[in-house]
Length: 106
Image (cartoon, rainbow, N blue to C red):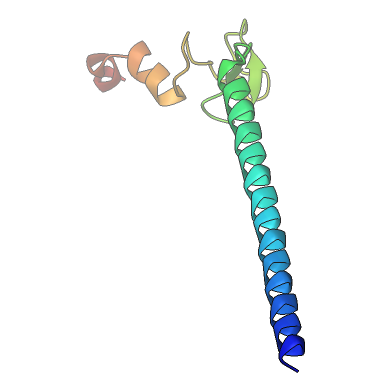
């Protein structure tokens, strides 16, 4: 009877060791997956930063927001003057075009 108890105890220890080994393997797999995902994310972020953005050849109208060809001076949709180089709104255009003295005289 004593031998049966030792055998059961030994079998239980073997079962526990196998369970721990399975847990360790599963943990290692999860860690590898996390590292691979982090590496992929870093690569995507680096590619996004490194990829040069093509300069826009469009100018947004400050009134109707239509995207016009950058060579046009007036909006193709509403006919309002487009911002000068570097963008800007229609209000900025008017401020630059007319001084306050000229506006008072109107």
